[in-house]
Amino acid sequence: MLFRILFIVLLATSLFSTSCNGKKKIGKPIKHGHNAPKNGHVKKRTQAIIDIQSFGAKGDGLSDDTEAFIKAWKKTCKTENGVLLIPRHKIYYIGPIKFHGPCKKGLRMMINGELRASKDISDYKEDKRHWLLFQNMENFIVEGIGSIDGNGQVWWKSSCKVDKTIPCNTQTLTVPTAMSFYNCTNLKVRNLEFKNPQKMHLTITKSELVEVSRLKITAPADSPNTDGIHVSGTKDIDIHHSYIETGDDCISIVNGSTNVRARYIHCGPGHGISIGSLGKNKEEDVVSNIYVHDATLRGTTNGLRIKSWQGGRGYAKDILFQNIQMVNVTNPIIIDQFYCDQDKPCKEQVF
Image 1 (cartoon, rainbow, N blue to C red):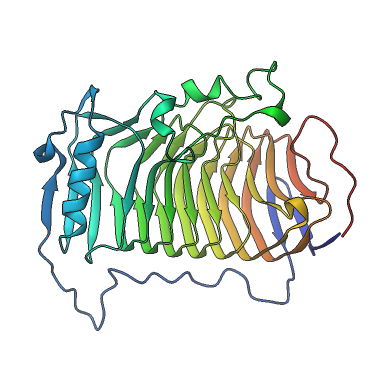
Image 2: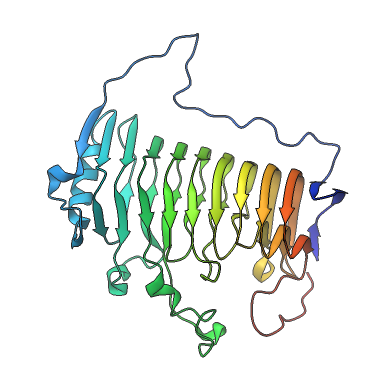
């Protein structure tokens, strides 16, 4: 086992401050590249509003509006300072969509209505891992007063964690994430509600300079694999002022992530805030410079957790947990270097 985790735990009533490698300064300011005024001047820009209704979307919660979204995105992507507007008081029933970039600069998606996922599993046959996928975007904002409903109930009932007659090691159903961002730079996701995802609510992968803020994320405590915010291979991300109750990790941080800050988070129910799992299948995984502070965990299975598989290698270093309040948390702090997420015991492995 070559996972290196140096951990110091300071316990005072229900407040926890935990750090790895205390000699190095942890939690350096996260950079935010776009929309930052320079030299005291804010440059005004004219926005081009592109209404999804203009492309044939009905928003009645029954009609399939997928094609309208695809057409509207193509128009928005080609429009400098374009704003794709999804009006309030409407429910847009849509299948999986890839929102491809690169696009013109200054794009924004304003979700004021509700996006509701198709319940037809066959709609996901071309891409079984994603419902709403944004990729190769730069200087992009997704925000609004609306919601993203993954209609996850149709997927959960087929999970081995729900249907105990299905052996988990033979399950073949691939389940999509509700909203995913891949290879994005200068990204903001804010002020939205996520609920009932098929699998994870929100994933940020191989991205840089990201701010995720003021989200409300909810799923039942027994919903399987419904992580709130999942960070993978991402640099300089700030997650703050968000409310998360779900059936898995509220926030999970995995391989290749560095300079991750999470603050003013409410978590619970759920599995807490996790780093890992790392090193599955003897892989080399690394995570560094993680700063989690001013968070409340209430009624969670776990509190703060670092988990790695036996036989893996790599490191989790420069980690600080500070000012964390825990109420009715079953396992407040876990450092697990023999993580095994299956019914049968995992095979003993060494590197």
